[in-house]
Image 1 (cartoon, rainbow, N blue to C red):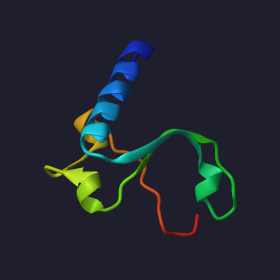
Image 2: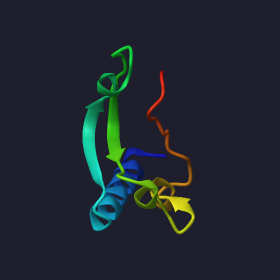
Image 3: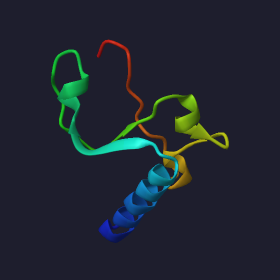
Length: 78
């Protein structure tokens, strides 16, 4: 995938998140979310409040824009 199409995908994802009132952060250091305080920056860190915000119409929000699965992290030990 070339840079232009990746930028377009990101733009479409941001539009979808904004229209769904789902919070997100650009370039969020993953060390802020890990037990060992390690990890680089996530290009886009999505912060759903509940499963309804993450999954709509039987598909994750991210896959409505792109056909691969996002990495989902949370409430576990690294």
